Image 1 (cartoon, rainbow, N blue to C red):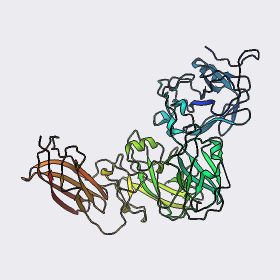
Image 2 (image 1 turned 120 degrees about the horizontal axis):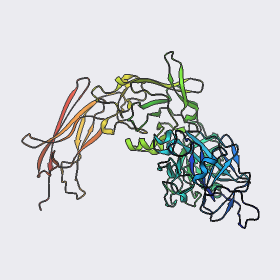
Image 3 (image 1 turned 90 degrees about the vertical axis):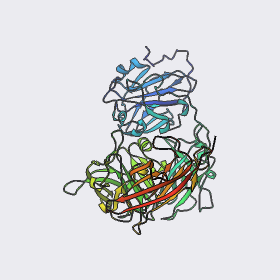
Image 4 (image 1 turned 60 degrees about the horizontal axis):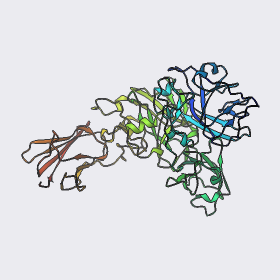
Length: 567
């Protein structure tokens, strides 16, 4: 098996200079402990996709803390792999493929990091900024599994093109990845967000590296409210997914702008499409109550993780990287402090943001109306199932918001709080027991990133029901095939039962039994009986009854005509 890469000068091999993306990083073993089958060492896998033989002499493999040099001629043939590791690890990894040991090997972080391959001229060949959420699996993210690139034809893509290895050994160093796909990159770059470094400089953050030439064209960027194009723009290394923009005039404080991008291309050549605009503005310091802890999941199912939702109640634009989450100990001292984010992230007035370590799980468990309103973090402070504290503060320890939650805050008739979040009823009221309620089960038990199912501004209480139509015909013709029973409770903690009866008072179908409702929502009936048999045409009665923990009750009923076409 081959492992030696030092080629004599007399060897008859044509070697070419290395340009960007000719060599790509296709696998990262950042946390090899505990091992699943591979040697317990970090490694990086490179692949030559240039179609030419490339010599890596003079290149560097670097992270945030240091770099390892390719100090000798190391030739990689077209469409072949190279395992890069420390000198200590090389004898153990060479059995898996062509391997080179490097001095001064950088030690990768277990939860996140940046890996760069740099040419002898100091140019970025390929760079990856990875995060533990890329594993898409809480077990595999805990160690022993590599991150693999899914499709080498989408080398510009970030998180969407990476996942945990499926190989039983934990990784596939030196060979085709276990998750290998051949899909080409046909997706345009998307503008994710912006942040300002000062009043004249704006950073536009994209979901993938962009083409440096198109990013340098000022006419492709426009900030509404400013007539002139930016003075200059440039893509920022090493990832090239951010574009620095110098504005023609200073942005005003507490003013929300919109950045619009046109004609920008990604590194493959796809042109930006509909996802070409984002809010922009200057950040202000947060004061007490400007941001509130609006929702909290402290008791996730085993496969999931906690999440916290923030809501900006102010008129300010606030940079969450300046804020911290903490717990309090028995002496009321802040402990376990963690940055809300490790990079600039602006929360605009009236915006919601769900923060968790596993966005993929969050999206599989709950409805996500806006995926840009979910932020991945390495971890949150401890949130015990039964009770705990969560504090949001600035770097000086000034409290922005704080809650001391308890399982008793959940709805008293809830059988289990697992997977059910606690929602703030009124974001402008204190974070106490009386202002929190279990998320409605009819809303999936949580509303991360958007208005709470239990939201109401404290005021009048009403309970209203209505039908989507006076008659319906479940014949799959696309017209009134399903009857919707819509409700608006305008209060919290309501348990509702909805049932269908025939004209003789016989129960026909139970649509909801003791369901905890949100402020508004609907139940549906498809015209079938309890045993899922088609019911004949006729008049049926919809009866809804409800109650809450305070003893309040109510009922509503209305008839509906079910019609079926004759055969």
